[in-house]
Image (cartoon, rainbow, N blue to C red; front, side, top):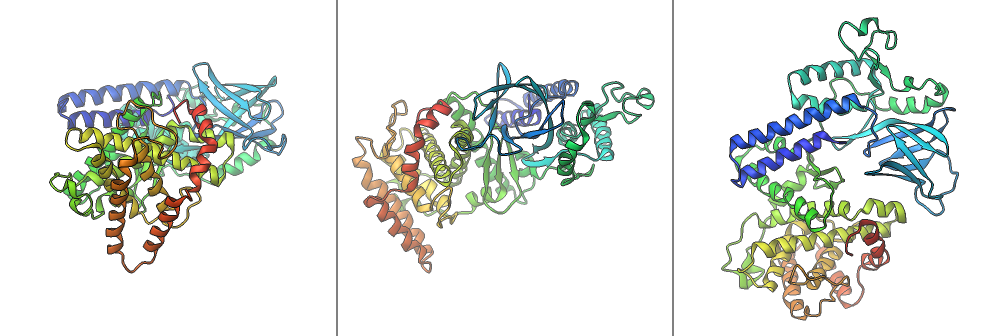
Length: 531
């Protein structure tokens, strides 16, 4: 297990959700949390006894054992050689690390030759290379390996006390820094009281340098590594996370109302992950959720973690949503949850980020090369996959209350306001204009089959029964934009929005559509999902 802290936090969030749903009581929640803590302590004890594990979230220097030559670096499982040989004319990278039930292997992109990684030793072409960790992603932040011996000693002592007292909060903040440090506990004395003082291996320190374990390494060849580590020198007290968990974030709220609103939409968004995994039959474990205290609306998804900014959560909650009868007159008698739009937006953001993982977009980038056209196509894919998930959620929540056309109109209304107010109208090399995104989402809603078990067509607007949807859905979007313009009448940008929308409707579709068609089959092959 590479991230026991993330798994423990996920279990805590699951028990909190079960408690909120009334499926368990507080005593049962405490019992389940105690089991999660016990599993956590067992895991970290196992990791302490076996420290040399390859970590996909780390950056390594790959050094030849017998000569000390630097072969290259492995960053987020991508290998790049230290020099330009062999050339990279065919691939955007030189190799990629894969992990499966058969172990960890490195495949070279140019020759397709395979090397085996055992612990932190790579064997390839009858040569052995040491993987030396230089950086690791910890709490959503890339941290350089701790290289200060005094700081390492202080962290180890603090961790020992925390472990003895079962202080999970302190220990989980410290452990990743200890594990990724340039030092490790002495293998001879194991830092035991009464033994380390006379230990000749560690000279009474209780720990040794990881680099010092390989006496055949040439010290001159390791100078670049030492220089890299000196860029970031962390003190023993620099262990507080710059991002917080959901429960910690909720405790920061000044008012009960904002806390409860945030809790509601976060809970619904987090609960969407297992639904997506089930729908796509993905074995990927649920990610850790972290909240970055940042007023700018941001979101970032990785296979082990999803980061939301506090600005994104506040943005979803603070948008003034017009009355539904002003947008969709047929729904004037419907009692709309005031948190529908904020909840839909946050779920769409989470689904968007998680679809990057489910569709293996990073692997697609690594294989096809990172270009603005490709990135825009992948964002387009994440946008529309997330929208389809949101549509199915609203469809399930309002089944029997609304007809299918009204459900699609409600979907547009719910997602439009928080998305439009992000003010990303200007051209973005990755996401395109806001007009392009809303237009493609509108067309996607026309192409989805009403029956969730029917296979959709891959072509936008190809739904044979979609003609009756065109007028009401376009009218819903038009009315939303009209009210939006009334609120911002002094800005000429909104006239430009309608002009751009008209150009796309007449026959000039967004670039992302054609870019997606070029890579659609590759995404399906790499991710083993329907495209």
